[in-house]
Amino acid sequence: MVATGCSGAGALFGDSDRQITVAMVSNSQMQDAVELSGQFTEETGIDVKFVTLSENEARAKITASVATGGGEFDVVMISNYEAPMWGEYGWLVDLTPYMNDSPGYDADDFVPTLKSALSYDGNMYAAPFYGESSFLMYNKKLLADKGVTLPADPTWPQVAEAAAKLDTDNVSGICLRGKPGWGEVMAPLNTVINAFGGRWYDEDWNAQFDSPEVRDAVQFYVDTVRKYGQPGAPSSGFQECSNLLAQGQTAMWYDATSAVSVLENEDESSIAGDVGYLPAPSMAKGGNGWLYTWALGIPTSSDKHDDAWKFIEWMTSKDYMNYVVEKKGPESVPPGSRLSTYEIPEVKEVSAPYSEQMLSAMNAADQSRPTLRPVPYEGIQFLAIPEFQDLGTRVSQQISAAIAGQITVDEALDQSQKYAEVVGESYQEESQ
Image (cartoon, rainbow, N blue to C red):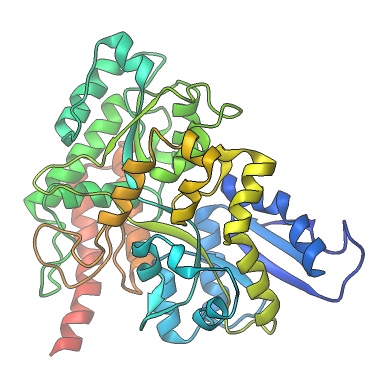
């Protein structure tokens, strides 16, 4: 665990008896917030102690703390997977009254699908810091040099065919996550399963990892990344693939739309301004972009709700977006949370290549109908059930092992079927 007291512990502005502890994921936009948080301390007199962790570590640490009422965190970074469930359980503070009482905060400015995804019973239990769907990103120059073109709405076989033509000893044809974790390899893979017409469970909670649709999808994913994917694929996540595409070491990447903050930043990307964007590839099902947000909530176990809200208000406000433009540049603005962000002139200019594609994918994402055939769960790249953290992680370990060549896809799916059956049976018993 890495603790960063960038604006905390009185390091910059003197000692204070008002301090909050904020647990966050260590992605680039969050690191920017840590760096810029001196403004918050100066304006409010509230010191901030940051605890920044990798995605898998953050999920485990924050979940354990909030679920047990540990009380060590006053603000936690969570997603649209946790927020509605934790709101229902009473683990999070209802933020709607705070939002309504904060002049100019304007919760209606949030992308509508995100606002809904972070709500339980009509009230928001977390505020989005950034939002994302998923799309296919590619190096325009590499494709042009190889004479490779992609249709405006590609299928997965068309993407694999292009990856085969683009793959060389020095540049991989495509980058796809292979790192274990329900929010790592399972995020893109679940959308591939959806595209192929697969699902985790049928309407009666019968596990479906033994279905031909799921098998075809997983075999395709594993084969594609093994043949044309990046070196070290079994340990590659969002950050690794982001670095590879930004430095011209992979030709394509299917992942989160939030990657634009790196890819279009000239300080971080050698291909800024030369990136193409296409919708999430389709198959039997189209419209496969996921919906995800990193958001900020207040555990009910915190005894500093008001100060915690002041920090959330600062970090998710319209003013913060403009402050990032001023201090870090428009490429660094947290993407996809507020509609008004894309009316800021500097942001509107730099986001022209991708903003329409990103926002349309986010607005079209329907968590209530993620699959071709009916399912008893919600969620696109995850299942919105409490058991998914453990189940998704277990399945992801099997998939990652198949990508590593340690087991076959059939072996991975056989074991995943057993894991899924245990969870499915518990829901079948509840319905009897």
